[in-house]
Image 1 (cartoon, helix red, strand yellow):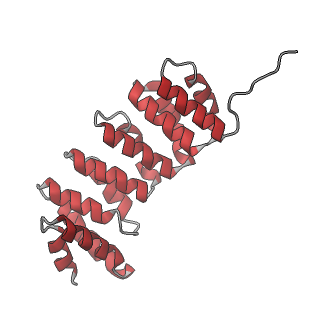
Image 2 (cartoon, helix red, strand yellow):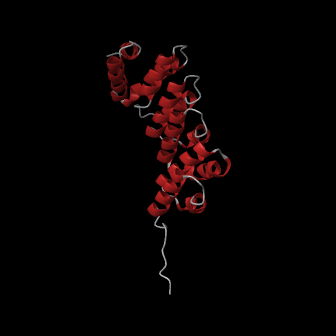
Length: 195
């Protein structure tokens, strides 16, 4: 199938056909991925949010160095569903350049986007730890909770002081993620037998 035909299928309004087209685009030989990316980039500029969403969905399946930059661009889209799809795509295609935008998205009022951004930061791993520690120190509670979950899951020992400090907070969820992270790193609660 030609790329133009795949784009037509992606824009068909039929979810099954669009999903099949997205997967077929990803399965094309690598030399054709640049052409696919150019077509999808055009869709990202369309006024219809559903077309932008499907462009982002297709991008997240394609293994090409240009994909993370386009996903990062979509993370700033005006439509919440497109931003959510972009965050999910960045989880599938982790990228260091996305760390600042994903860290900022932890504070988004859209809780699904914030959770997906945390998942994308977890996929980045240790390079995301310092920005996550910044969120733990200076953001509101929902963002701090998502940062604690991310830090607990990444398991980098630089998070130990922040997770220990989180144990003193008046939040069951914060305590849960702090304990979870500390246990994963082998520094959970230690009990001493009195002499």
